[in-house]
Amino acid sequence: MRPLPPPAGSGAAAGVSAARRRAALAWAATIAYMAVLFWLSSRPGGTVSRWNFLKLPDYVLHGAAYMGLGAVAHLAFAVSFRWPFWKRAAAALLLSAVYGVGDEFHQAFVPGRDPSWQDAAADAAGAALAQGLWWGRQARDRKRLHPTRISE
Image 1 (cartoon, one colour):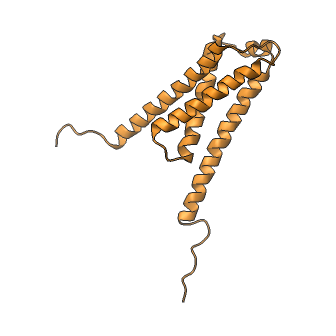
Image 2 (image 1 turned 30 degrees about the vertical axis):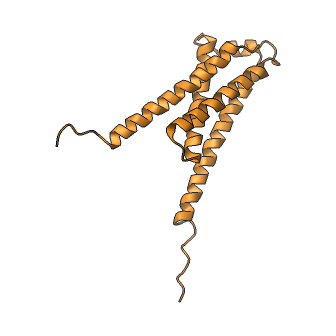
Image 3 (image 1 turned 90 degrees about the vertical axis):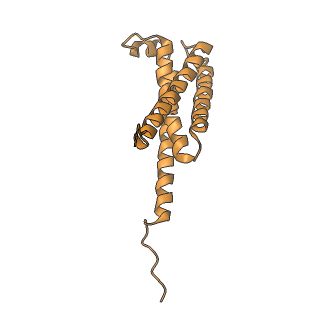
């Protein structure tokens, strides 16, 4: 007699399916975040400045926004590819910085907004800060999993 096939949703096939779902969800979050950034940069200049309740400088807002993009992009690369940390960080930083430059170009066509290289630099700096935070989290997790022994 032949053995019965395993039930649907079990075994290695389910693991691959769950990994693909996680990757698809991470990329969907990254694309949604990029869409929100695009929508925000499509607002006329006066509208955006009215939303800045804390009166933070423009470069802080750019850095914070692109720190978020760098973080979700890093997560998307992490669940999609088995790359070492530096490759995931470089890819997330590159994606975020290129999107930031494109966003600045897009702002040239929005009334009351104008592109600036300083904003693009703040975007890249925010994405780089996100990679630093991911690195710190990875180092903390590694230390927690493999504590060093002082003596036997």
